[in-house]
Each structure stands twice: as structure tokens, then as C-alpha cells.
Amino acid sequence: MKYEVVLGLGSNRSFVSEGTEIEPPQILEKACRRLSSLISDIRLSSVYQTEPMYVEDQPRFYNMAVSGFFDGEPLELLDGIQLIEADYGRCREHERRFGERSLDIDIELFSDMCIKSARLEIPHPRLCERAFILVPLLEILPFCADIKNGAFYERCLRKTGQSGVKYFCGPFTF
Image (tube, rainbow, N blue to C red; front, side, top):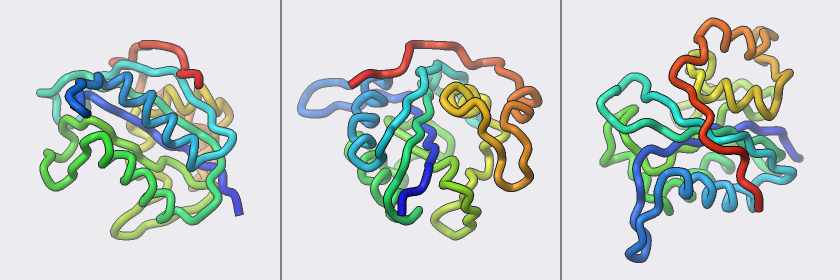
């Protein structure tokens, strides 16, 4: 069965692959190409440059959202995106929480499911406090509603404000 999903992507650290340094916007583009093999009817938001949250002594992030349909279960998608993250240098054991990362992919929404387990929480628990994901999410799904309480994410964005979120470039095409 296919489920509609929304992912949030972010990067603020380059990655060296085969002697070539890949900058955060290019990491996001390459990750989207890889995600298109997991997610059908993929839609990409623009990319936004954003201020870091929680840990402020780090470079700005590049963030975006992706939506589409996944034919599988939530943990299967999590396993797939963690492989993509690892291919671009993500190593959770050697990073500081909320710190720099070459690639971070979060499952924000997975159909109308609510999941709370040791490995995965859906909807993402901090979704409504993060303008850096609300802005791109609302760009591609302007009428997206919170499955927990039916509130539109637009209301969440009005509460958090868009401060620190700046347009960087339009959606990638491939």
C-alpha cells in the first residue's frame, strides 16, 4: 500500500567523496535524486537557508521538504533514508545532538499515522516549532493539516514566525 509522506531535509556541512568536496546545497540535490527511487510522485520545495536552532555555534543550514508516496512501512522508509544519510557522511555516533551534519532527513508525516517508538516518532515531535520545515512544507502542501488535532500548519508557522528562514533557490529539477 502506498502512503503519502513528507520528509524534511537539511545540511550545513560539506562532505568529501572521492576527493571532491560536495557543498550542502549539492548534497540536498543528490539526496533528492536518491529519494526519488524510494518515493513516487516526488515533489520538492525550494531550498531555504536557515539559522541553526538549539545549538547556535555552527554554520547556517540549507533546508527543504519533499513529499510523495512510499510503498512500504514507516520503519522501511526510515532504514532507506538512514542509508542515504550515511552515504553522505552522517554518523550519529560521532556528532553532537542538533549540531553540524552533512545530511539530515526526518520523516515529518507518514499518511495519517501516529507512531511513538524508540526509533521513530510521527508526526515529528518538533515539527510545529520549526519554521525551517514549516515554510517548505507549506510551499508544497499549502493545506496540510496536523493529524493530531486538525490544526493547519500555517497556524503553527504564524506562532513561530519565519525569522531566520531565507529563500536560497527554487526546487531542484531532474
